[in-house]
Amino acid sequence: MKKITLAASLCFTLISQAQTKRPDNWFNLDATKDNVNGVSTEKTYEELLKGKKSTTIIVGVLDSGVDYMHEDLKGIMWTNPGEIAGNGIDDDKNGYIDDIHGWNFIGNKDGRNIEKDNLELTRVYKDLNTKYNGKSESDLKTKAEKKEFKYYQIVKADYDKEVAEGEAQTNQYKFIRDAVAGVVEKIKKEKGVEKVTVDDLKKFDAKEQKDKQGKAIAVAQASAGMDPQELISQLDEALASMDGSRLDVNLDTRSIVGDNYNDINEKYYGNADCKGPGAFHGTHVAGIIAASRKNNLGMDGVADNVRIMSVRCVPDGDERDKDIANAIRYAVDNGAVILNMSFGKKYSPGKKAVDDAVKYAESKGVLLIHAAGNASEDIDEITHYPCKKLENGKIPSNFMDIGALSWKSNDEMAAPFSNYGKKTVDLFAPGVDIHSTVPEGLYKDASGTSMAAPVVAGVAAVLKSYYPELTPKQIIKILNKSSIKTYKDMKVIKPGTKDEMIKFKELSKTGGTVNLYEAVKMAQGMVKVKG
Image (cartoon, rainbow, N blue to C red; front, top):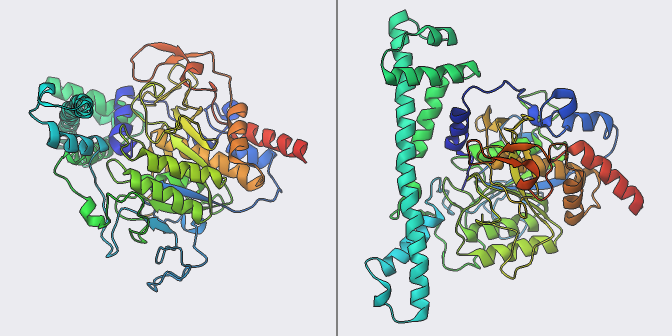
């Protein structure tokens, strides 16, 4: 599930109200020099990597699709050297026809694609509800049935809760949207203007309670740099995404793909449209990792010598385990050495297939960077899939979970939406108001652990590019050990609470924030010692 989503990002903004203005490129800046919690990208290139040679590496973006013609991405996209574009032939015999920049596992051979899907929770609930709706434990005979019935009760309670929360969130957003739009329209009418300014909003005499609330929200966001009309537009987008499809038990998108969904081992399905519809999320992620640093356009990614492979496997809704397993294997088999996985969900009926793919990536020396999730939960206690812990209880040596960091070096340092975990989350990285590429040549801000993970993937890509002999295990060790611990003992607001305080070090294994400068210094030392 693409858990930044506009709703999550916008909700954070609305809750925090007006925010301190920060540079668009803040995630690449330096804490000491620029007073933001960036990863010191620019400082690293200027002081440690200038004049050094690097190796071009491939980073797989397993996501919603990437706009490979974006002005800041087209020069850094992976191009399959063994494939001839558009000839309808599997030239390199890898099983995938015309996979020029990657592959799409959520489309069919005729070019139709899935954009929206329901949650895995919805799919699990539907299957169990068909069997147990209207029944009680006394109706069941076997131990297996009774055990599954108890699981059904847990799933049903979770589903009912999601339905109620979804309705409440929709109503909240609709109220805010209507309140802000009402104020804007009244000001336009009273003043005879087309564009409403912050000054206009502040001077507006709101008499009705709804107008007062709309004015307060609009003023706060306008003061933080968001035009009132843009706020209304974002609220409209958020409401459009809350169309109920994620909880619709009757939604069956899989018929579009045309695979045998029950055959978990089936690999060769989908199409070559690795952009697809709804590519906002994957395009944003790709830009953070490696948007061109040499073209003086838009923004700069973290890594400077990377090729992005787009593997489309995440719809607007929950990804399916079969697609994720195949996406991992496809990326590994076609040369990716780092995979960014900015997705996750609460249920994983096909966990074994994903675990096997993770182990396959481990056997091939491929590093997996995974977003910790945006539910403000302790994922030591509540599993966020895919997860480090395999079915056999082992922890793979190539898997990292990343929490989201604000630019602020105060008690708001941990993003309020970020999942956390003293045992599970490795470290935190910039994930609030990250400015990056989006489809059709545009750039926008987005927030989420989905943004934090590609920051780390970019840092890891720099290490692998300049020090190609490093293994995933060594890179993880470097990233964790070199992470900045300055704030580990500082008390921050615990994600998901209004004012509960917790030491920052309790939110992750390291208590640290990723830093490219320190990571490169450590890599240099490790390689020298090794040599």
